[in-house]
Structures are given as structure tokens and as C-alpha cells.
Length: 127
Image (cartoon, rainbow, N blue to C red; front, top):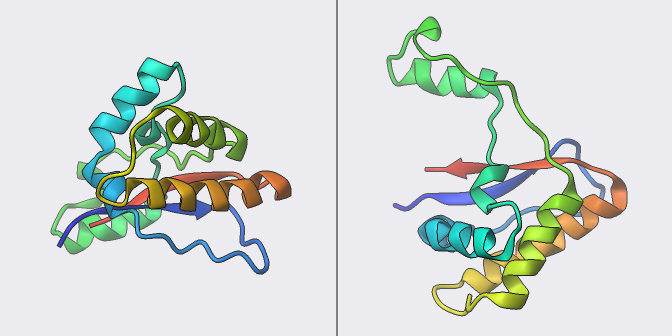
């Protein structure tokens, strides 16, 4: 089983399917972040955030006491900022292996709709 990045919108957009694979993003995140840094855009992993309540539930299921882990607040990002990174990576990075291209195109599709509707977003990781 492998980890997968996926987009979580701050609110639902009617008719928008936000499903994506995201496994290739996870597998190649280091190289994608390096490429983003080289291109002068925000790294993809920098768009990661998690709802502290959901994280606390997960940690509790793992036997971690609620006060043992300090969780930062959920952060939402602008879709335009995400699109800037995704567009730069699509235009300037050899992303044709292991379905990275498809994952980035899915991000572009979802973030384009989010930008059109003024909806914030963040990445989460499914393990």
C-alpha cells in the first residue's frame, strides 16, 4: 500500500469530481518540490494541511493521547497559488514517468474549478 496526495476543497463545488489518484505525487514529491524550488514557485508539499480534529481522532486510534501532539490549525490555500505551482511543473518538468503527468493534470483540473469559484484548498495524504 502506498501513500497518495489528494485535494480537499474548503467547500464542495456542485458537479466537480475531486477524485484523483495522487500516488505518483507522493512517490515523487521530493523531486517535484526541488523542481518547484528551481522554478521559483511554492513547493507542492507546502500545500499540505490537516484538520486538527481529524488528526486527533487518527492519533487517538493509534493510542496517542490528545495532549501528546500539538496540532497546527487547518490552513487553506488559494487555488491560484496552487495553479501557479502545478502550471510551472507541467510546463518545465519532465513529469511523464509513473503517472506524475496525470496526477498534475488532475490537480490542474480541480484547482482551475476552485479558482473559478473562489474556493480554497489544501492537500491531505491518504496512507
